[in-house]
Structure formats: C-alpha cells, structure tokens
Length: 222
Ligand SMILES: Nc1ncnc2c1ncn2[C@@H]1O[C@H](COP(=O)(O)OP(=O)(O)OP(=O)(O)O)[C@@H](O)[C@H]1O
Image (cartoon, protein in one colour):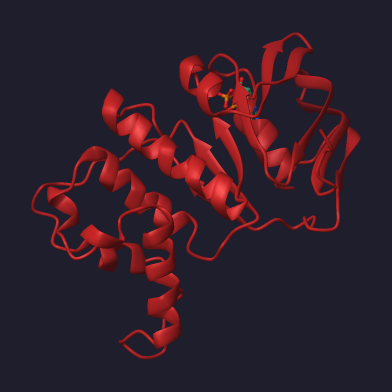
C-alpha cells in the first residue's frame, strides 16, 4: 500500500536529563492519517517523547523532519485522563465546549464561533445531546465533551494521554469509536498514549513501544 506523503519523521533521536538517558537512537514515522500508539511502562519516557515531537524539549541527538503539511510548530489538541465533573455542574455540554473558544471581545458568540462549536460537537457525536447538563452526562459523554474542546480549532495532531484510563469499558469503546471516526472521516492524526493493549490493537495503525535501556519496537498494527 502506498504510504501517505505527509508525515513527521524522527531519525535517531535521543533525550537525556543530566546523566539519565530517557531514550536513544529512536526512529519512527507518524503519518498524516495515523493512529499512532505510544506504549511502555510508567516513567519510561512517553510524555518526554511527545514533548520532544512538539518541540517543547531539546533533543540530545538526531532530527525530526516535518513534511509539508506539518509545521515544526505543530498545533495540537490534548485530552488527558478523564476528570470527573460533579452532577450539579451547571453548564450544558455546548457551553462547556464553548469555554475553549478564544476569549471573545463581546459577551456573546458570533455565528462563526457557534459553527466552530457545532462542528466539533457533530464530529465527536454529541451534537444531539449538546443542550443537556454536562453534570448529568455519562463518563463517556463527558470525555467526548473534552474531546470536542480539543478539536475545536482543527489541530494538526490530536494527543490522547491515557484518555480512556479511568473510564468503564462501555465508555472506553464509546470514546475510542469517536476518535476512530475523527481519524477515518476527517483525517485527524492521532497519538494515543496508553497501557491498554486491547484498545491499541483494535484501533491503532502503528505502535511504538518504549522498553528502556535504548530498546524499542515500532510496528504496523492495522
Ligand atoms: N524535566 C525533567 N527533568 C528531569 N527528569 C525528567 C524530566 N521530565 C521527565 N523526567 C524523567 O524522565 C523519565 C520519563 O518520564 P515521562 O514522564 O516521559 O514518562 P512516561 O512514560 O510518560 O510516564 P507515565 O506513564 O507515568 O506518564 C522519568 O524518570 C521522569 O522522572
């Protein structure tokens, strides 16, 4: 199969903190339509690697090449582990998602801003329930509201950092199906940091496992 021409390529990258080498000579590609899974035990260097890709940390060695679609200053959306929201939280799902709109100069939203929010709500599949109170939504629906916030400005990369870790099984698959839809239908490039191997195997396209001591494995999954 022909590989996409848009990608981020890491070539022999190494990162150390003082004398502590986190990873070394790491090489892999993240393609434009990728569902790239980053796995490895706690403290192995997954967050460090993502920060390196985003240019927030300096590499000790190696280079990261950005093809034409990706700029070296990447725009990204970020969804961390699920943070629960109280039952009596007053905002609707739509108003909660709108909180991430850049601060408007006037205290109401323009048509363009409303369209941005509606598009994000539709893309993650919560448009029909957008007027409901977020506090009364299920765990999966709340996490999809965070997901809608993360894709509001159509970022080049969507980073899911253990985003399904504390959700029940049904909600986990519900959120992952929404992410898969973004990836399949809208070409959103996904980096999924997870310990959940069954999810990685079901949804991932490539995986990079950091194993410590400079060892890693990079493979195609689906
Ligand atoms: N700024 C820093 N200075 C020094 N050491 C750091 C710094 N940032 C991270 N580390 C260390 O680098 C190692 C890798 O941390 P990192 O957060 O990347 O791991 P991780 O795989 O994302 O872990 P987790 O799964 O727990 O989130 C850890 O030993 C951590 O303490």
